[in-house]
Length: 396
Image 1 (cartoon, rainbow, N blue to C red):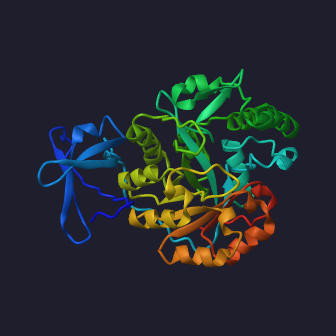
Image 2: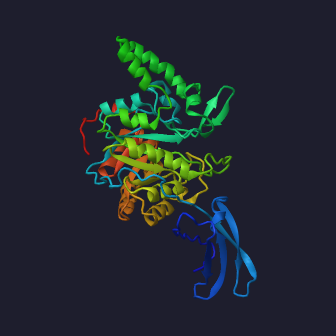
């Protein structure tokens, strides 16, 4: 049924050889009378993400255009070792270390209190585990030679303030990339700490190796304690107001398949949650595998960050509707959206059957975390988890 200003979501499955197939999209008025139809050749999908189809009425007259956003989801080329769904029955609020022992980038006052170990490194995540973290949240991107590495941004800053997308760099080039983009030269501070705390060269060499930025996802999965859960944020480009919108990977299926390959072959029995700010990425992850839960990260409309032009990210109600419709497992809500009446918001999301998580700089406040725990939120993602003095126990 057609309704002015409405957005229709339609999905269908076809066999791999679909080049000669065509899809017919028919629209009707609310009273059931025919409005018009548009035709989409499936070979167009591989060329365009957005397309305007001529809308043709029953007399074959073009009466308008049908704007379409196309998301093509391809199956995995190699069958995974296992598709047995992992458990999602968590009995307590998960304590999740942000980027291991990370620190909020935007909070300048915390710079002097930075942990010496750089965030999103194996050493930082191991430290979070030793201080009682149930899980760590970390970010994954894919290089030009299709290696999944852990890093927060889709770009790195080279000398001269020149930003280069990681997808344009090989993994070898990334290993030799300068560290100016890391906060207050974390690499140097990490080495100073290691030299202070370790006398034996063998132990020093091991810790220095684990403190290197841009670790491979596969190495992290093989090295980290198996009891430590992982909340893996898959980075993706999103349209933001006032920002230059760049497409970092032309084929999103290849991008995600690289990450899933590493997970299937290295995750073993580790508890894992997949998440992303990008709704399309979440939908693709949900359809490509059923082993691990998929969570949509919600920013909402706040004064803290630029508004995302995708309503499914900028509007909490739209995010919940989308996550429920696409059979996602939960949403991770920006803490600023839970400052007022958090219990009511969390409960309303729970009633839809979704898990709830919270992220953001408000989570650095002890009182806010206690309030979240009393609201029985699914998980709290926060910085400097080593300050919390959590009891070390395996809850999975």
